Image (cartoon, rainbow over all chains, first blue to last red; front, side, top):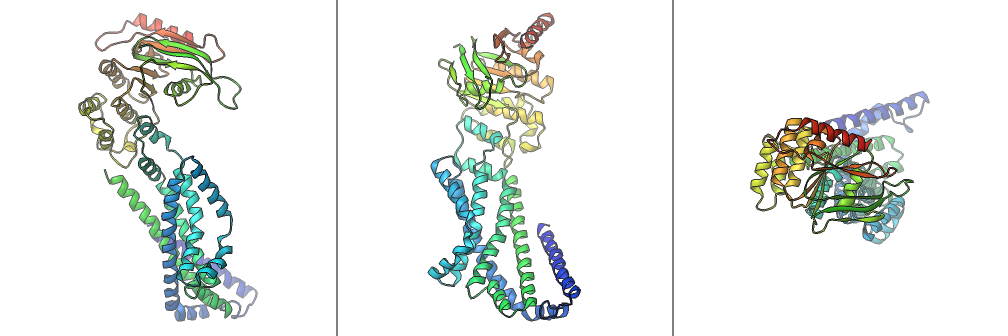
Length: 251
Length: 231
């Protein structure tokens, strides 16, 4: 249901955007060179769909691995840093400050040190979605669910595992939303990395299309990016719902 | 072992007035006692001072050898990842399985065991919550509106049974129900606010037991005393 909704919402937004472009084209009598007409767009789509589909799949794979890495790291550090200890405060302050810095700006350093391959793209994707994710996880994990935790605390039953379980369970919707949202960041990070230097992925394809001033190729690439991201986010949200349902049914 | 609150002063940071200013009272024997007073007078704050969650500016709690203080309140929840029955099983200390079964029967919660906490009515939720506290070791149990939303006959039978089954610990029952505190409690500590002298008054309750019909004149008199002391 979520997946279905995500996809048709994307179709609506994409169609509106293309319709807007066409509106500008015909209102200002712009040539096909500036904004291609619907027919040229269709022809380009037929030509490049297969190639761009592989590129998007490549980018999505990097983004997914990068995001998984970020989620794992954010959970570990978020759980460790949830307490009001000096270490917890250090992690929070560090995350806030690093998050305020545009990670894309340090991408060139990563490319210089690690080259323009898969690892650099992965690292940038992971870094871009990591800090917002970490801040959200810390926020969720450091907020006590007093109504539930009180009993376990006063009777000496509270262990860190139980505390994390309670807070994660009570905030599963928030966590799912944050994780689904971070998918966009991971995808954006990967595309930006590909756009800057890399030699593969849809970001690289967009860069080539940009050099060719071919807006129709860019529009086809954007369609595939949006579609793949909608499917991925829908699947993440669906997974979150299944986990919550399964968790609630297990006794 | 008597329990005493001695010269407690509490003022919250940035607040201009004291919640308690030299508050003192004694409870001389274990049993069912009440903390009574208007909303905002500091009943929950006092509960937190007694359990050690809140450190007073000055004063102390003299509980002698009493060491385990528990505070339960009516907004508590059980996690919804498991059934109420499973949760209760998990928090039952070894050797108290029979007590758990008895309490489930007394609290009329048999039908709730297979349900998730969020699916229970408010009255059932409050009973489940109180039940799990009664399974623990405690010297003092503070029950902050713990039987809220429970119908009167059930509440009455629960209170009678608690008094019967747990004669050794202290119970501090926080309630706004004058009839209830007057009838069931051994003594009632009336909190009157830090601007009044004395800040608290101790009134003897009827300490009703199961099977003994209440003396309605005496009950009325106790209720009047409570209302007069708190107003």
